[in-house]
Image (cartoon, rainbow, N blue to C red; front, top):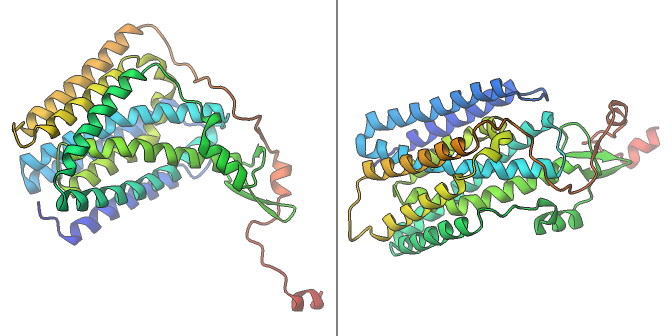
Length: 343
């Protein structure tokens, strides 16, 4: 698959344009409801599918199926990521109106980190093809671990990353609107929202370690791996607001994702022995996810939406409008000796 530099630049331009549109649409802090989240989710899925159709038409059915297989794997694994975000937001009592801002910058970081991981992974595979077997073993182990730990819950308040952050970065104990950093009494301080953003970025890096090798299992084209990741990630914010209050209903999803990881790991492990067509891989992954979702919804039939409950990481309040207005300018120019003498 020969993608010219202009093709890469065009895709990056489309991604940046989509992010800009999303930023303008959500420039004011507000609570995103289910209807708005569903509409945006439909938009992002449509964009991802439309790009797959473009790949199919330009490069043929095989590469088109490889893209859709990678996109489906990444989108499915992203649901687990969404549930972790819900627990983090609940643990820090982040007001719903501020959550989109955190996720927007979280997605920017995720795109940058994953782009670097994919470039490194593609270079390593190109030079050392045996690394694919390492990826395969890792995916099978990850699937086994997901099944073993399917009933365990994370506790963000006990995170080592959070402890290090609090030790190194002076932090306020209240939210100042959507601000990540404030200046109070001349001192530059982080708000709890910045700590939440750090945790969101770290969790995405952890998930990327699992998901990127899984996409490499269905295609070795770096362009397809990156675009499948990118278009799946772009819809994560809308997916969060759509599904976060329904995580209690997806009781079998973790098992389904674990089976997907094992499947792609075995497929990669048998790469030189048995050729498994991309069509078969796409069908198997689709069937596994569909069965897990349908079985989950049937098992929890009748249960409504409910907010995630998590142990609190701290008693974080919200500053009043007067307290926000009283903050020092964030980027104040230092007064020089000449300025002071003129005063």
